[in-house]
Length: 470
Ligand SMILES: *[C@@H]1O[C@H](CO)[C@@H](O)[C@H](O)[C@H]1NC(C)=O
Ligand SMILES: *[C@@H]1O[C@H](CO)[C@@H](O)[C@H](O)[C@H]1NC(C)=O
Ligand SMILES: *[C@@H]1O[C@H](CO)[C@@H](O)[C@H](O)[C@H]1NC(C)=O
Ligand SMILES: *[C@@H]1O[C@H](CO)[C@@H](O)[C@H](O)[C@H]1NC(C)=O
Ligand SMILES: *[C@@H]1O[C@H](CO)[C@@H](O)[C@H](O)[C@H]1NC(C)=O
Ligand SMILES: *[C@@H]1O[C@H](CO)[C@@H](O)[C@H](O)[C@H]1NC(C)=O
Ligand SMILES: *[C@@H]1O[C@H](CO)[C@@H](O)[C@H](O)[C@H]1NC(C)=O
Ligand SMILES: *[C@@H]1O[C@H](CO)[C@@H](O)[C@H](O)[C@H]1NC(C)=O
Ligand SMILES: *[C@@H]1O[C@H](CO)[C@@H](O)[C@H](O)[C@H]1NC(C)=O
Ligand SMILES: *[C@@H]1O[C@H](CO)[C@@H](O)[C@H](O)[C@H]1NC(C)=O
Ligand SMILES: *[C@@H]1O[C@H](CO)[C@@H](O)[C@H](O)[C@H]1NC(C)=O
Ligand SMILES: *[C@@H]1O[C@H](CO)[C@@H](O)[C@H](O)[C@H]1NC(C)=O
Image 1 (cartoon, rainbow, N blue to C red):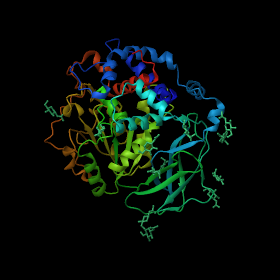
Image 2 (image 1 turned 135 degrees about the vertical axis):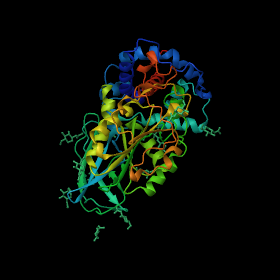
Image 3 (image 1 turned 45 degrees about the vertical axis):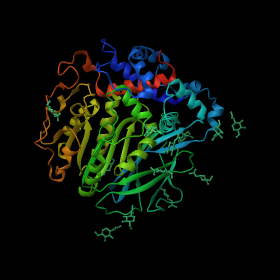
Image 4 (image 1 turned 90 degrees about the vertical axis):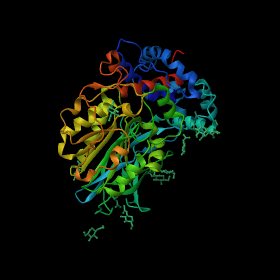
């Protein structure tokens, strides 16, 4: 069962260790003020500060490099026969389509994997190891549900056949669409032109996609996006849902144990945009691992307008690739919709966004409507993580805006390019700012929001794996 988490650890440990290593300073513990620890996880959370150093130094030797499929099988104690007997699952991540050469060009983006049958008692024993005895039934079910999905074992080079339906009828012919072979990590990502879909929409339309003959969910959605209009690209954690990635035990608790909670006013704001902006389309972008896609989709689509989703790819083996993954997903959107205007929404606790957004804005200045960054330090005194606004210096100041709450955005007329409310103080230094030590945060600056988040998840996962020397 350890495997469950192995894929995640494999990716995360490398990042956190590599990123933390230039900091010979103290283990990342930037919140000297007592953090209100959720009751049930108190024993775990108190273990965090002492475990950090041990985890950081132990993980590279425990995990080594990116785990291969056979490493994973070994850890799980699965034989090839066992694995062969598990049937294949297919995950389709909600995607989008553009209109090219008289046909909708639909992106098929997803993962081929196997989900071992992990018994409830296995999960229970892990939960006991986590010392989460105080969880109530709802919380325990959520923890089980979310950890189980992390048990996915990627299936390299799978060959899938997909279909598309619109309004309940299959559009593709009876042989379906043969997708390109998945990569070494079981991921596939390609555009396929589809005949037979209605063509001249002025607003987005949702079609259903499905992979044939798989055990797993297999089904997904794609939004057909009109050639022109406004596209909203939004980060999820701490922009749409309250995660508090900047407070370790709370980020953890909110991600794995608690029902997801909306950032107040954002569902209303996004739904208002959905109904008022011309040809609007929503694209959600997160660095959460791809295995948690279904959890995210269930939550997102019941609270926010249907859109596409970008998850963190599985086959990342170098920390710089996380920024690259952000940049690539943005680049793909900008290239796919060259006539659309983009509104980019993020927050100060994500250092990758604070780089990726200004960079894409410089590359495609005519495609930027507005960049909105939620200042999580301004609204949540728990956020002690410094952030850098350096890369915004070269941008047109009328295009970006640091906001605090949904109210700061709700009166803006984005359609005519109004991105700022003069009543909201900006406090932008174009350098490092925020954080408990103010602008001279010394050693803390090496722990950016993203690194912080990764560290948090690494500790969680290593605790689950039993690799943390607690
Ligand atoms: C795999 O399935 C086959 C037939 O369904 C069965 O004979 C075999 O024992 C199974 N192998 C394992 C390791 O369970
Ligand atoms: C999974 O395991 C449980 C008990 O360990 C068993 O009852 C159940 O049938 C198994 N499910 C599958 C799909 O093999
Ligand atoms: C169980 O925990 C959930 C999530 O924190 C909470 O919403 C719910 O009220 C709790 N249920 C009980 C019976 O305490
Ligand atoms: C998790 O819960 C969702 C519904 O809330 C369900 O569809 C899904 O199958 C569950 N996943 C697991 C692995 O139990
Ligand atoms: C998928 O098709 C490719 C090319 O035909 C082939 O090389 C590969 O082995 C196939 N993958 C599987 C899992 O059968
Ligand atoms: C589905 O049907 C509705 C009503 O006829 C139509 O407006 C819409 O364009 C159709 N959607 C697609 C994807 O064809
Ligand atoms: C079905 O679609 C595929 C791919 O678009 C095409 O190659 C094939 O000729 C089509 N078959 C029929 C019967 O239309
Ligand atoms: C597309 O629009 C044209 C006129 O603008 C109309 O004649 C045609 O029926 C529309 N096609 C579809 C598939 O809706
Ligand atoms: C899916 O399974 C059905 C029934 O076993 C089979 O007839 C069909 O050829 C399969 N399709 C694909 C694409 O594998
Ligand atoms: C896939 O199908 C399940 C079960 O019918 C449904 O709950 C889920 O919402 C569907 N997912 C998508 C993305 O359509
Ligand atoms: C549609 O998207 C593809 C893939 O990004 C791109 O190559 C193509 O140029 C786009 N089509 C149009 C009309 O912009
Ligand atoms: C700017 O700083 C002031 C005073 O420190 C604070 O009240 C305000 O919330 C800050 N605004 C933003 C957008 O961070």
